[in-house]
Image (cartoon, rainbow over all chains, first blue to last red):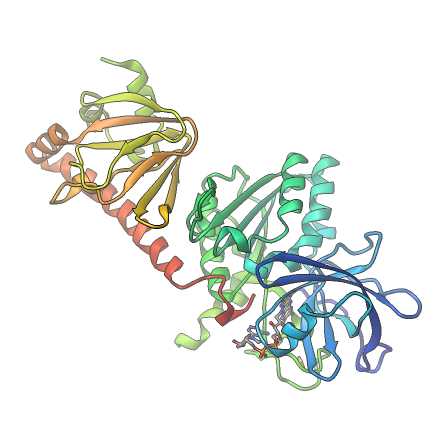
Length: 286
Length: 156
Ligand SMILES: Cc1cc2nc3c(=O)[nH]c(=O)nc-3n(C[C@H](O)[C@H](O)[C@H](O)COP(=O)(O)OP(=O)(O)OC[C@H]3O[C@@H](n4cnc5c(N)ncnc54)[C@H](O)[C@@H]3O)c2cc1C
Ligand code: FES
């Protein structure tokens, strides 16, 4: 597990939501909206790649959502949210000028600031899973441009209209980054890859020895993706995944997010795949 | 004998680790072909008499639906095989295969290859073994896609 300090329970912003105002709203893809938010007073706390906030839609409820912007990037903090139920639907519909509540940041990070120079980083994302990785990729692209190591972005989506952050993907490609996108089901005009996201691995010329891999998406995708990366030669201990469990307190008090020995809000969401997540993913079969 | 065919075949993952006589068996029945973007390699329902080992570019495996036009079910790129229907009866292609970009491939005449492999069961087993691996990989990938990997039932 990537142990790291989280905001201690009782610290400002840990248990009481702070009001933020929506300053920009973008429709990213079918059912996904990005909200750019700013605190009504003062500045937003700093966070690390892969951490999450508990986001309140007043009168509806509170959900865990990762930051999709890069830490320290100029401008407001961004959250990219997929509409799956009551709270996410309300957040996706929040107009510019409306208010949301924020507690956080919470949880462990992808650890990209500590990646050794020269090492290749492989980022594999499925669906909304690209959101928690977007900030990390932005900084990994800058790392590549500074000659400190390459990044390979492999993104899978159900269909072309569900591909997230199209503009970012193009910009990363223009910056010389290897970007692969696959869809399960093609559509008229789609000339890219049709197949599972792991089908993008053979075409990605990264050096598996020593590589770091970051995976985010639904659990099944991370299971298959993790195995495929290990089969390709990546050390299982250098594969990291972002876990998801239903969250309530976000600070390790209520136990709602328990997964085996972990409280995902405190010990995750980002954890090691080899010797931890790989076993937890298979736990239910034992 | 065509040196270009031999050099492409020896570098293709489908024949990786095969003994020289197996590569030779294919080389004698193969030629290098290229396709412009949009051109069909083969059409659904036609006799499956050629297998293509893709050496450059991408091929769309597609099916034509009357009101929807071509629906791409999979794309196959460099280092992979297009056209597996020659391996078992009724030896007929089940889908259309269309070049997406400039495609280069080694086209293998499969009818004489089948005869040669039947006469040499050791090499025949090698080929069947490799074909089984390709088919298993395709089957598993297809099953994973049936799961709706990125779907809302297990939000990402
Ligand atoms: C650490 C973390 C980071 C997250 N980051 C993001 C993000 O960046 N963007 C984003 O869109 N979503 C993210 N999520 C998921 C998000 O929290 C859930 O989609 C949300 O809680 C659903 O709430 P709801 O009331 O809208 O839906 P509900 O009515 O609660 O549920 C609707 C459907 O979503 C499923 N669901 C609900 N919560 C989860 C969950 N936590 N994991 C898996 N399935 C769930 C339910 O089973 C149901 O099928 C993250 C979750 C965690 C734990
Ligand atoms: S959400 Fe309460 S312990 Fe993790």
